[in-house]
Image 1 (spheres, rainbow, N blue to C red):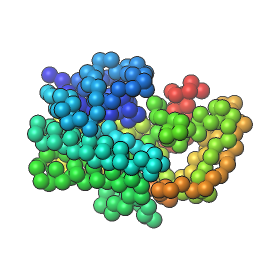
Image 2: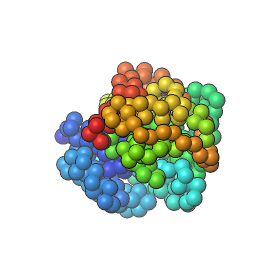
Image 3: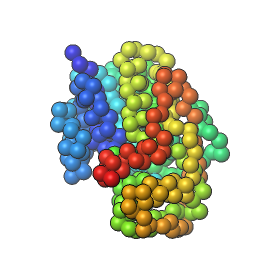
Length: 317
């Protein structure tokens, strides 16, 4: 009998890519997601019709328990994720990211289901050093604080109740299916602006640094961890696991690279403009992912290769 995996947020960006890959590998996938036009679209875009879909929110405990029936693993990708919006509307971030995750933890505990919780590098906040799994949590925004609370709640359930859980902290994921527009991520947002011959905007001087990891590399890491969970490996239980490239790039360098790649494809009318720095933005996020690499995993996409893949998949250019 095939293993059945529940993916909360399974029609979101990471969830859709993971759901598609797991279906292709023969897993039975259940998706729990709030209904919406974009989520309906992703069912078609990612060929997810073979998955069992439960429409609803992790904020509803009854819906969570319904979705968890007969599953062998929960992967919790569901979250509200935008820093700027969390500053304007903090309550809804704590409702979903904290109390929603609490419902998922309760289901894992009461139904005895292993849990892979997807956290974020944002929980670390700004630290002028490479971020390791034991680096302190210093969240800079309500979004980051809500994710830090959820992250530590999962760990508390592991310690207190003995649930089988691990906490994953991916670093600045990008790729096919990522949201653009006002509350979208930087790469799809800038790409759309360049396609429309608009100048792209950098907040601050552009010296804030990041690393960017392609969604295919993140999915491959998740799949390594899924295999370990189903084998019953104990070395990841209760553990935090970073997933990143460790390759630092400034936002200004990212903009220049994207403009260059787009110019090679005939889109060359955009330039860089600067605006006042944003509240809550962290100056630097650089990972140490040695623990994940110890499981015979590594990145296959450098930034340029990943951007080219994204442009081909998302925009057919």
